[in-house]
Amino acid sequence: MENCVFCQTDMDGEQGVVFENDTCMFLQKEQRILTGSGLIVPKAHKETVFDLSEEEWADTQSLMLEVKQWMDVTYNPDGYNIGWNSGAAGGQHIFHAHMHIIPRFAEEPYAGKGIRHWLKQESNRRIT
Image (cartoon, rainbow, N blue to C red; front, side):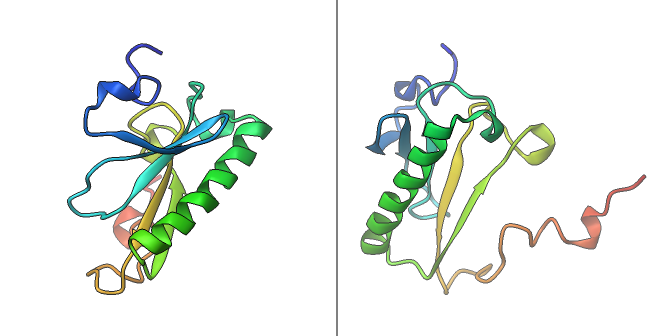
C-alpha cells in the first residue's frame, strides 16, 4: 500500500525499525509519554489482526519475546501492556495490523490500570 506508514516505513522520519524477522518488524519512535513503547507490524499489508497468517502469528510471538528481553534491559519496566486495536470502533486508526508493546512503570499515575480500565467505566456503558 503506497500510502501506508507501516508498509512504507520511511514515510515517518521519526519511526525506525529496531528488530525484524521474516514477516514482521518492531517499529519505535520517540514517545513523550509512553517511554519505550513500540509496535510489531507484519511486513505484508494486513488490515487487522484477524488477517494474519499462521507464520505471521508465530513471527509476531517470536519478535515480541525478543523485544521484551531488550526492553527489560533497556527500560527496566515493572510491567507491560500488550494489545491490538481492530476496526474503527476498536480504536484502530491506521488500518495495517499492529500490536502495541507498552512498558509500564510503578511510578506512573495510571500504574495498575490495564487495557480494560477505561472500557469498564460506567461512562462507557452502551446505550441501546
